[in-house]
Picture 1 (cartoon, helix red, strand yellow):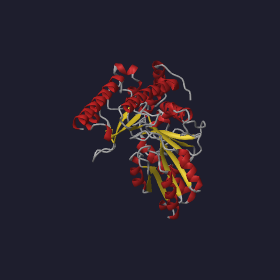
Picture 2 (cartoon, helix red, strand yellow; picture 1 turned 60 degrees about the vertical axis):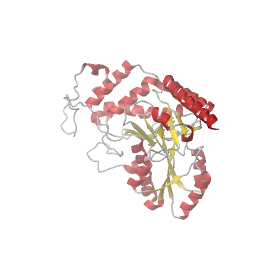
Picture 3 (tube, helix red, strand yellow; picture 1 turned 45 degrees about the horizontal axis):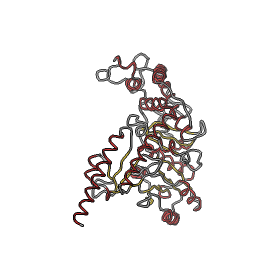
Picture 4 (cartoon, one colour; picture 1 turned 90 degrees about the vertical axis):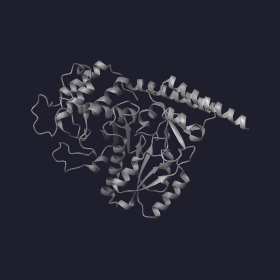
Length: 420
């Protein structure tokens, strides 16, 4: 995993040159595209600061990255900035997720929800197109810790699903129950399986055991496709766990999605979808005949500005910079966990992730609310509260939180002795 660091001024030059290779609404002969630059009353294009603000400049220019640029053709009006998106996809697919060069497709989507739907949609259509499957012969499997978007996905795509049970403490999938479930589903006529596995669940940061799951599937001799939801973990877990197998070197991984607007601190609306070459053709929308290259994506039109911002961030840090940055988050997470253990506070955490989820019995609600910890449920009594160690979670904030927890434990001990 290696790509170099570029200084901001050099990245700025790359972006401005890319914009020069786009067709501009300001000074090109554009009469057929159903868009224009942003409203100049609100977004003036001649503001002095834009000389040093390539993302804002791109935002105002309003390039539409509709379509799939890893495909043979895409709309030529914005080919300059499309090349930056292609380089972002190259870094993510080849450097981070170990894809063979030019053996993947992908695009910058709105986020993990869209990416999950794009994946399941592709696999549903693959089973229908290639194996003549019926909807009721297809099942979507995902753990009970998986992001809620999967419920939306299955509802919209009209697919049946089953939740995979996890152990309360370890958050690991119960493979004995899964083994029985696979036998039951096969007996009920289910032939085709779509599984969404997690590289960092939203609540716990837990990592699904892909090797055990695929071994079990193969023992049942079933057809399966696997999408990796790495919306949270995709920009930290590969940097912190050298033995990570959630990548395209693993023949069982068919697609991966990751959010730039989490660990990379990119603007919201920056999901990255990657899939093995050819599979996305199952959702080619040929009716999009007025679009050069047609369209394979769920969203259609999409802003090029977010792709440019994410490309700049990932190149400004370089692989070494991102690795160092993620390691600092792990150091902070390690310290929090060590301190909580010394205070006899129970928690769950994957050692390579920056999410620490505390058992609700061991921490007062007032402290959780004071520090904006997130509960696993807002209706009823939470079982867990989570900390996400991000850039803004500095040592001073960590110390204040731990002092409050320690004081609360001391107060509780005093009350126990007084009434004991």
